[in-house]
Length: 141
Image (cartoon, rainbow, N blue to C red):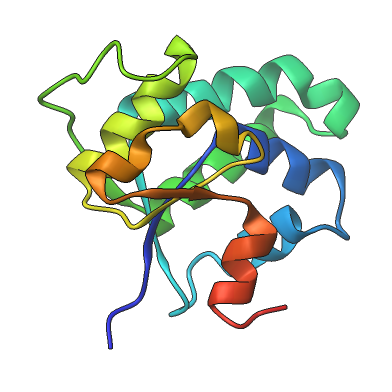
């Protein structure tokens, strides 16, 4: 049986670093296990890094800790080059890079706290769901 392939939206990463008690943090603690496979692209990693650096003080992280975190995520992810753009497809242009990656990587899920922003992703066979819903699917709740 194959494991689910996912893309993690930036808001889930931020939520995971803000609270050690939520579903987002639980999800990140499972990255690198055999429960699922994460996928990334240069654009998504740059977005993670930009947002984390901007919010690092409130997250209690140093510049080095942000770099280590990003490097760790990259080490556990499958990397993809995006050769096509579906834009404009979603209502929030900033989410297009997440959908493009999910399509390119043939992912089943986009994990996000803004599920409504990915309305229409089902046309590509991709479900936008919350980390809590995903943890229930993989029986980790």
